[in-house]
Image 1 (cartoon, rainbow over the protein chains, first blue to last red):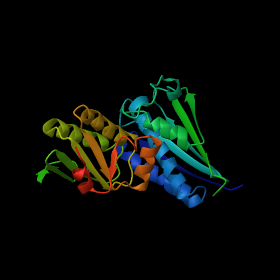
Image 2: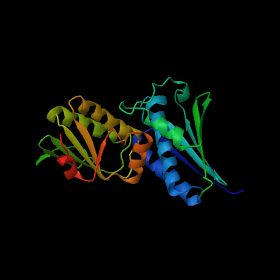
Image 3: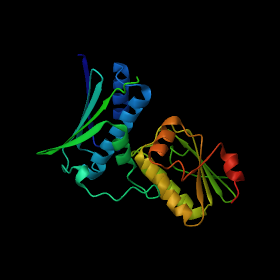
Image 4: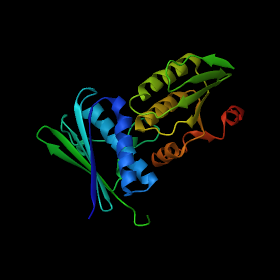
Amino acid sequence: MSSHQIEVRIDSDPANLAAVRKAVESFAANTGALDEPCCGNVGLCLNEILANVIRHAYNNRTDKPIHVRAEVADDLLTVEIRDWGNGIDPTTVPQAPYDPLTPGGVGLICIRELMDEVTYHPQSDGMLTRMTKRRPKSQ
Amino acid sequence: MEELKTNTPTVPTARRSGDAILLSLKGEIDLHNSPAVRTLFLDLLKTYNPKRFVLNLTDVPYMDSSAIAVLVEALQKLRKTGGKIYLTNLQPRVRGLLEIARLDSIFVLVKDEDEALQEPK
């Protein structure tokens, strides 16, 4: 079993989103765990989770900590996002049915459709979000 | 063709031609810069009340859901007066996101800006 990992620590400033996304995309690509489109999808979903943390968990504060850790073990990529925000599990917040003609909801669709699994683990002082993507068998 | 000011590097050029506003967007668009794009779009819609809002996305390799929300909000406003959003030159990741969000059919995808301007009103 082989294992590689990367950790990135940022403030909750949207200006940091692109750098973290690209770091994790590059990490996933360099390990050979996933093909290029899958790495891009992981980056997009990470972007969406981080944006939700900034907007909702931190109420748009730009100076709060976020830690991102990505690990590849064999064919499985795991990305963990730790925040020290309000600790609310987004899956427990009522959502209106998705309507393409109304702004909003696209991030959650991406996360649901592009990742194998996303789980939320409330902490005493925030939230740990874990998402996983396994190499498709056809790769 | 009238050149318009934009005040955001994400939209380096904006022009007006008849009932159309033509915009070229540039760079990756996410929560960092999508608010500035939203402000510009809403200003242009309010000022000029266009029927065609034509976005050239040649130089946009990536956008996230916050950028999509800006497009949908603009479309909502345009539809109230019978207007449409035309998208040209979608890059693969942007096209993929629109497909996942089932939005590729609510915008008008065209080959280039000329095709958007030639579409029947």
